[in-house]
Image 1: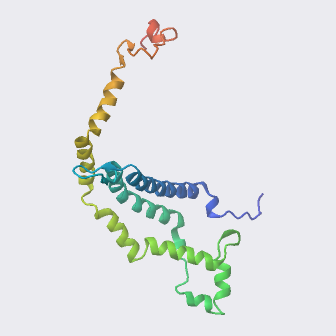
Image 2 (image 1 turned 135 degrees about the horizontal axis):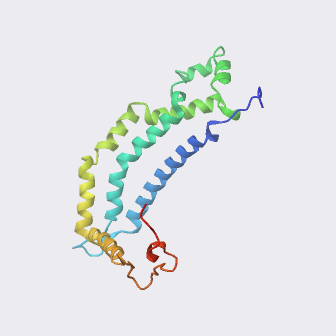
Image 3 (image 1 turned 60 degrees about the vertical axis):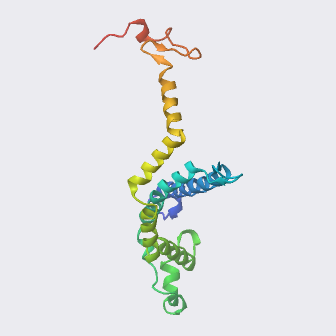
Length: 206
């Protein structure tokens, strides 16, 4: 209604929810890759009963890690925006009898989220992405594993060496072998000749 005041918390906006969902998906991805490295090990050739972490999961981790952290950092910067810097300069401001009432009134969050709790949360986010640590960690994730292209070439070469690439190519060949210009050639697939206008020759060129 016109003139009414309706307060929506940032968490209630679809775009913010989508960003949080993506961050959770990245978190789940790396947890899953870590689990796969441990729970699906491969035998270490030349040793007696020793295993190595799963190579495919490890290589996927190396390729995705430099992508994930900058992306998460970007999502935080995009959705939190000026909230990262619209903060008191020191915790001493909360101890000031003159300043504290203004902080409690103007720096609070939505729906009863206290100013002190909001500042603590946003300071934590700033530590993660805006400080020297945040900047250094992004640079670390981008560079510690090595050259951007080489990470991907190593993954390709490993797939070729282990036979995984040949297996992937075989899947494609098998798929293409199941049909020709006349339709399906595989015995378990049925050509829809009874309903196909193309098969009946009724389709005319425009």
